[in-house]
Length: 599
Ligand code: ADP
Image (tube, helix red, strand yellow):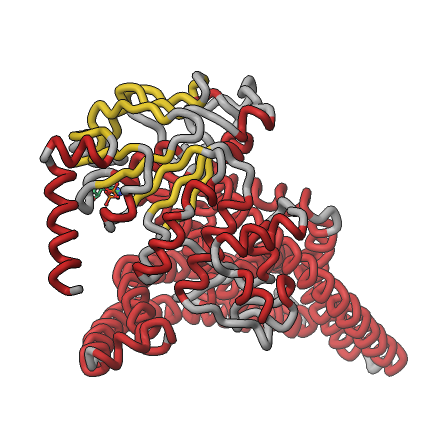
């Protein structure tokens, strides 16, 4: 019942996306379900004409009408089917696009929630099947259509048989139902093996296929001679896959044979009864001929209906995952209305204050940040240092409102950031990460995205980040395409050049605070040094947080914050912290010694 109501809701939605879809589908289903009546009626008519004396005119008329109706049916179905296909594709694309839009709108932390990612994977499978072609959305729609017209056809044919003689329909219905019940049980079991075991193996296999074929792994694969390891993993997985398939297919074929036997038995009994009734003269030859046709169509419709029903049933968990995914709240705990807007002046300059902020990742037992408090005044440049895993990036994620603190509050110019309109706030605080992404688009779009900037300003920032000459040397300058996947002749930049472009991108925005989360890791120490000696000039009057493992780069900041185990251990200028002779001093001295030794 739940499944039917879900399908109904889905079809209502599809009807809203394309108004012509449901009427077209109704016409298709009705025409398809009534189609067998043409043959049945005219066969009856022709044989009856022959039975009651050879009436050649009536026979030829019957044949012509039957052929004419068949032709009309064929033409109408061709048209309706092609319209249905185009409309279904349009709806599929629309729903798939809504899925992508939903992912973009989801809060960042939802994307790390296993429940969300599982629902997303399953929902994607229905639109872009990787494991089973039959799970494809268009095929599922086709199955719904097949099931509808087959069920309607079964109803019409049952009434017809019942009217001729009620005993004809009984064995078909009884044995047919048992046979289909068996078939669905076997099919469900086969699906469970597929869903629980084979899909997981399939995913792992895809991963190894990706390892073997994706260019970005090619260096590691060759360097560490990973070929043998990949092949042995794939062999193991393939043999488990085959075992799984054998298990499911064997069970399915045994029960499937029994199920088919029952259906054949039902059909056979109906045929015998038909013969008997004709022999006894209860029905005449014309009824006999039509009934043979009806019984055969009945059997075929039953098989078709159940196969379609099974596919729909199996695809259901994927369709429901789509719905579940689309229903995930987009901004939990944040009311959409009543959010304060930040005027441009408030975005361009600001003070950031963390007050007793503690945070735990969803599902984690331990706190990643514990009672963190600090204040960065407008225009101040602060370095955030600490060992890996000390919580630096987590501070930035909270600052960027990718997560919310479990305890404590963060303020921008004295305003609780959770009360500010997110789109405004993201214009006030911006960041460049170590794993930044350069898009396959023009250099200009990579720098500006949707916010167009004056040409001189772009060149000025490119100059400051040392990218002016490189961009000038590209065939179309700022309008040259980057990357080779989307555009033929696209330009490839080196890792360091991409990094500089990412830094330029963040500097172009008129944000009051810029965060640099190790964006210089790919740059040579000399280039990094150059960038950071000009750091104040680069970020101009904005506040900045800078994360780096190279302690020498932190010296250029106004003050430094040392994080360890999610707690702020030290705060102060380079000189103050060196004088303190604590963690910072230890890290700085160790690095200085290292550089002296290797230098
Ligand atoms: P840092 O930037 O200082 O290297 P992070 O802030 O990235 O440290 O991580 C701090 C701690 O939080 C680490 O122990 C890490 O394992 C944990 N952590 C980071 N991201 C997540 C996450 N998405 N889910 C659970 N734990 C996480």
